[in-house]
Structures are given as C-alpha cells and as structure tokens.
Image (tube, rainbow, N blue to C red):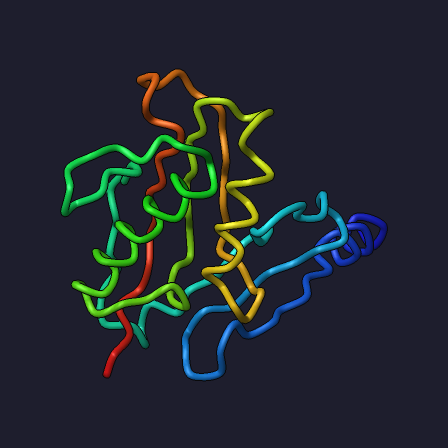
Length: 157
C-alpha cells in the first residue's frame, strides 16, 4: 500500500503558475507528460466561482467581415484575419485573449502551415502563457487555410 502511495505522489507532481494575478486562470505543467511544443500549455484550470461567464467561440475562418473575401494569400495573413475575427467576438462578449483557456486550430495543410500559424498565434499572448490547444490537419475547402475556435472566460468587472 505504501509503495502505491509513493508512486501516486511522484506521478502527480504539478507546477501551478498564475496566468495573471487578476484572473482565475492557472497554467498546469507536469514533468510526467510531454512538454508543450509551440504556443500552448499542457492544461489550464479555471476557478469558475470567480468568473462571470464562459464564452464558446465557434470556428472562425480567414473571412474579412468588411470585404466578404477569404484571405488565402499565405498562412500568416490567413491566421491573423482568423484571430482578428475571434478577437472581435471575444471583445463583444466582454473578454480578451488573456482570458482564453482552450483553443482548437484546424489547418488545411498541417505540415506546410503549422509553423506560420503558431508564429502569428503566439503574438496574441504577449505574456507567453498560452491556453490549452489542439491543432489538427483536416480537409477543408481549397480557399480555407485555417479555422480557429476557442473557449474563454468573461471576467467579473
């Protein structure tokens, strides 16, 4: 029994880091799981008692809301337009990038576009503490390079 207790204690070594002292978001890292490679965290914990709401932003694509045209020049400009669309929805709900806890990224060509998407994505988080994220390659229309959805908290004011 003591042997199993010791193993459990060593396997649950977790490092907690506050994303921002004013927010109820904690970054969770452990040496007992693969290190996060890229702009994401292994896990994020949210204290829901100190938040106002959660917002679930549905998948956004690089469609310019003013011109109605899809941005398909390159993954950098496509990612930026997609993130601008996500940001507009976050702000409309009373949230922002610092409160994003989960992101899902879908790439038309994972091998070609992952590095460029990750570069532009990382710029949205200047404190360099990133939400939990999954990024996958999927079949999409030929003019859609990227789609991004997220979950964020709406902080109490």
